[in-house]
Length: 387
Image 1: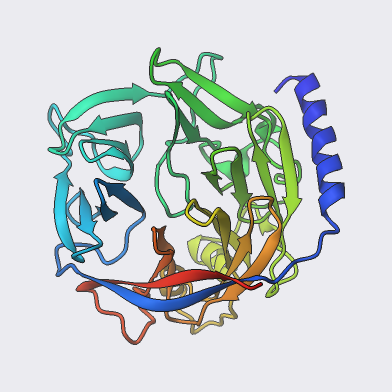
Image 2: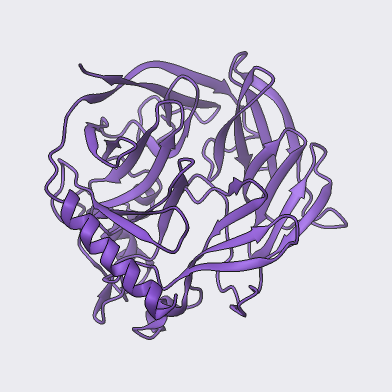
């Protein structure tokens, strides 16, 4: 980002934030769980996934599901509630793409797949044959991509296609705790691939929130991103504002707030081992995901409230099955119109999708007394707007 763009960015950011910070929440939206979706899967399909999405073709609505047990992408017919077909992905050979770690459905016979540790987008057909590849290791500006991009619903960094352009998210790579304090100033927030000339460009270098990387501790760098047809909207785990832009040159900011927690606690740059890190993540609130509902033109923010733990808590199991969640509801103008707390120990909010009927949230939390690994179970939440 040039100095002039940075000045414009900061000026617009301050003005917009000042104008909107005093807005009051209008509690006019409610999410009501009305029915259950149940899909039999047996023991050949993982009952949880890092990538799932809704897709519709010729009047048939599908739940598309990345199955890590067999490295395939399964299309469930939501009408019959049965498996329709699966795209079998190869790990090796001429159509090998390694370990799949995300996808985006362009059509039933054209699916983008992202792969573990590979800076390449693979375009496969219904038979799993690779029909094209798009490498993003280096941009036209000379930036060497550090982190591998994954198009998936967990963290919600799904691929965005706009006309003949692909939009990927981007973060620093390597040992983050060792990076210098000013490192983020040169890191692009997104990558852009033109499908026609295949050129890769860096977008919004230095556009990460300015207080994201303090000297003594850091808020997480991880974020989710959606596109509503006009704005690209970014949400960081430990930042209490939404950031949105039309062109990745000028950014706006809007404060967000939950009714169930007051303050986001910065995460230390270094903690003593994985258990200490995950204990911190289990105990403290964060904004997990932003989800756009194109049918109702609203945004859902899935926010984790945090729970108390002690020496007897199975931190790893709790990490897999976080349950204290609330859903903030924002309209297209980024005004909060409602919030819904989810019941504890029932849902797995990292597994969700938006369909024609509403927001579906998985019930496959291992702490749920009704959990059955032979089924995918979702509650359908419908949005109601009070007059």
